[in-house]
Length: 139
Figure 1: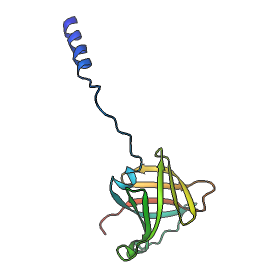
Figure 2 (figure 1 turned 90 degrees about the vertical axis):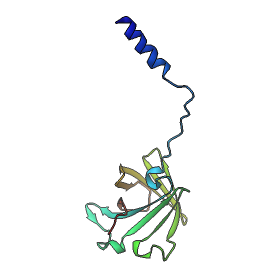
Figure 3 (figure 1 turned 90 degrees about the horizontal axis):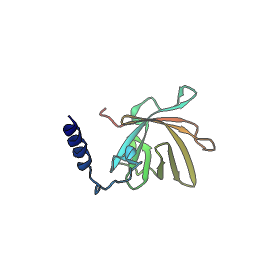
Figure 4 (figure 1 turned 30 degrees about the vertical axis):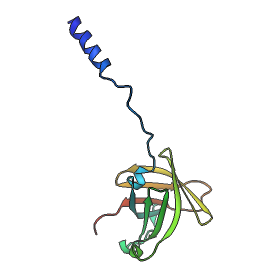
């Protein structure tokens, strides 16, 4: 039994590799999937009241690019207009910062999954709405 236990311990120790290179986690990958990804602004909440347009074609979409820029526009203008281009940065999977056109918006990431992101505006930000983002799906 001792031989078997010793063999198992030696096997575990010898199977570890020291030359494995660890890569830093890309915290923006949730928004852009390593390329670009479109998110629909499904809801804009203020105190349980939704201010997002009820028609899907009039809702906003945000396209996050791997470059650290994103485009904000109405879904019915996609492919026709460029949209408002702003820079974005994700800090520790907890904070999203959008900057552009002389403005800075900071959001706390309060929900985070592959199919839903909830962004709550931080104090001092001139944006009042809690945003629910969902990936674009088939109509």
